[in-house]
Each structure stands twice: as structure tokens, then as C-alpha cells.
Image 1 (cartoon, rainbow, N blue to C red):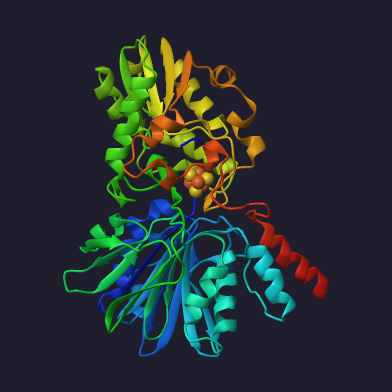
Image 2: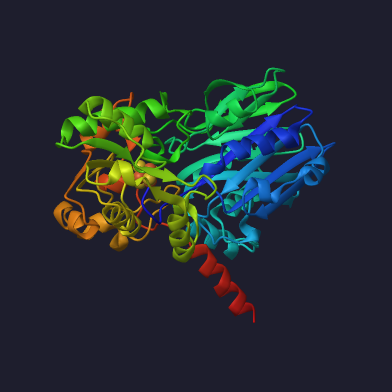
Length: 473
Ligand code: SF4
């Protein structure tokens, strides 16, 4: 993945497990790729909710002492990358709130496109907000509906527009809900001892020794409690809009997502790319780590040898997810080491998953040239990204997406490569199992599954909060 695109979040929940805090920790660790800015766990113990959240990686936020303090047999967890609201500690999740009916904690993956409208409406009714996240809007709606309605959650969720995979913790149950379009994944599992759990990805279930049961359906609420697992629908499922970028880049390769194993899809993307854009060369090399699976597919389909010409330093985190450009550039320099003997004097096909701004890719291509590459043919396993995402992925503004203002030839020149080709939209959609209408492709096609006339940008609610503070003064 080229610089500056950030993923959303990971969520987890487990009911009736004596080792809840450690299970949450392990599941969050397995989903670390979904968010590296903050992490948090909330547990319920004898009717009392407790939470700990902090900035940084899961292993930085939690230690044995902290986990020992999170006692209780049920809990939820969250890894965050900020897509609405700044990267700061008050926005770390799970968010914990008191309300007239008791306490609730919430972990959210996705983005609400109507969050600002809802927030304004509820502020005008006197509700106070303590964070700049769209997630808090959901809690405020829930609190305000709590006494008035028979099933407050089912009443509140239809007011939300956009992407949301949610895990709520109450004192007597966990409720997991997925938006009617199914943008973000959410799966149900069961531990060997029979404890039900939910997670963003099946890799989290694998990590805690649980088995995959099924996906939470779009428009469904699943309740985990002492009564077992119960299901109800809060909305009619809409035409699915599963984020196909999860398959291209975001998800863990071992996860099962929207009915397909991610690794298998990525290899198919590479095979299709080789079929669509062959080129005479000496070997295929992946851009670590994200281009590895599709490179394998490309090499297999083209009959060319697969070689690891760029070796990652495994002690440097995934560069794209660092919040600032300066941090990312340092991380790229540290992270990628070129293997001179594989690169020097050879015609290379380099396979990567996507290009966003192009600046990091350009730097990587220059590294290969300096190492003596004779030819560089860059192949990208998705189409050119030309549009923003309002459903849980923090792309830069459209004007900063290199493909929004440059032709493929101009991009190739900017990157300093001998040839450049992207996988076609049709080709990409042919690599997944569901009919193509079931996937969101908006960042490539510009066809948004719902109205995004008034989308919430990442810092909109932040500015809103600052305005409120200045008015108070
Ligand atoms: S716009 Fe792109 S990244 Fe966003 S949900 Fe749709 S496919 Fe995924």
C-alpha cells in the first residue's frame, strides 16, 4: 500500500469466558493491522463496567498488571485508527458511558456519513458530547431513546447512515450489530468451552482458539448473554456494499471475508493482473508485505520466477498507518532493504496492491534503480484510486490521489518506471465469489452505494468541538 491510506478499526467481544481480558488482548493483537493508534478493553464484573484505553499498540497499552485489573467474564475490545475525530486519547475506544438505564461501552468500526447532522440535532436538544468521534453520536442516541422504547438499539440503528460494525457491552449482555449494507466485516464465533464471541476478522477467532460460526448479517443484531446467542433484524438488508478493499489490502490474508479467504483472492488478483498486463521480464518481485500474495499469483500465471528482491525489516511497523508524513518516511527508509544480487541488471516486474499519493512508491522505485535494476515494470492489483471513501477508510482528499489528476502514463513517468498497469475493475470483481453488485467500489468507480452529499470528513466533529469550546469562553 502506498502512503497515506489508513484503515479504520478492529472490534471484538466475548461473553462468559473466565479469561476475558486475555482473550480480548489476544484478539486485539491479532487484529493490530486494523488500527495502531489506540487500543482499549472494557469488561463487566458483577454488573459494573470497567475499561482501560490508551494510545499506541495493543502491547504498549496493556501489560499483565493492567489485564489482571480487568476482571470479569465478559468484555469487548477495540483497535483504532482515526477516521472520524483526531488521534487523541479521549477518542480511544471502547467508549464508556453512564445513562439513566445503566452503563454501556461501545466499539465501532466504520464511518457514519450523517454523524454531524445527528450531533447538531442532539446538541440543540441539550445533549453534551465529550469526544469528536461519530461513535459517541451512537451512544447519545441510545441514551436518549433508552427509556422511551421497548428495543432502544433497534430503534436507534436505523437513524444511522453509513458503515458500522458495532459491539456494545451492557451489564447483562453484548450486542453486536452490522449496518444494512454490510460494508465492514463482523463475524460470530465460539470458543472450545462454548463462549460466544464476535470479531472484525476470523483471524481474531483463530488467535483465541475459537471456531468461525457465521457472519453477522447486514441489518442484524446478535445478542450474546447467559441465554446464549439470539438474533433479530433491525432493518431490511440493503443491496450489499462489502468493501472489496478489505480483500485487496486491509484484511489479514488468513481471514475469511464475505465468503472468500483473503489470501486466495489476492493470489487470484495477481493471476488476473498477469493475464491482463503481461510483460517480458526476468522475475516477479513483491512489494513487501502487501504485494506478496498477488505477486505469487502473477508469477504463477506468467510462468516467471518469484523472487524476494526487497526484504522488509520486520521490526518496523506498517508504514502507511503512521499518522504523520515525517514518521512514514523514516519508517519506509528503515523498513525496506533491496537485495542487490536479485535486482542488479535484471528486468523486474514489481507487484503492489495499490497506489494512493505515489510519493512512497516513487521512493521505492528509486531504491530499485539505485540497486541497478535494468527495467522496472510496475503492476498494481487494483484499479487507479480516484475518489474518496466515506465508509471507514481514511484516504487523502481526492485532489491528492495521484490517479485523480494524472493519466497512467503520467503516473509511470512520475514514479520513474518503464511501464505501469493497473488491474481493471471488471478483472478485480471477477476474483471474488459474490456477484459484483454486492461490493462497494466507490473509490475506483465513483459510484457511491448511498448518498454522500454531506459526508463527515475526519476532523469535522473535531472542529465542531473546538467551536463549542471557543463559544463557551
Ligand atoms: S470506497 Fe473503497 S475503501 Fe471505501 S468502502 Fe468502498 S471499496 Fe472500500
